[in-house]
Length: 175
Image (cartoon, rainbow, N blue to C red):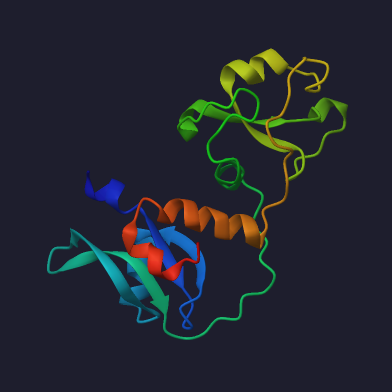
């Protein structure tokens, strides 16, 4: 794995109280640690090298000051829709890399459908082409799950899912 790929790996972010609050990329986690805003609680065996130093790649970081987390809302973005839908086409159920997925407006924009959490789903190219400018019912297609807003529950569920691939996260996540 290249250094650039390693910088994109997920890192669990804990509040000062050890409560899991977010997932960020290694790059962001290193910035928080180097600025003295967070401490590394767990790290991987890999290292990131600069011209003068090497740093263990963090797996779990903890903010040094407690942050009050207001009711969490996520920005409506392609990345967050794909995360919510677990990189799975909501029509055929295939899990694919993000480069092979598109976003589909359940109610097409040309028919007044909005770009909202409740109207956007992850969709593979063949299903998106098949559905075209129709509703799922008109195209004789069924959604696997109705689209919902990104909630605190969704966020915690994603942390648990990501944590299954990293044993170091387990003691911080409640299963």
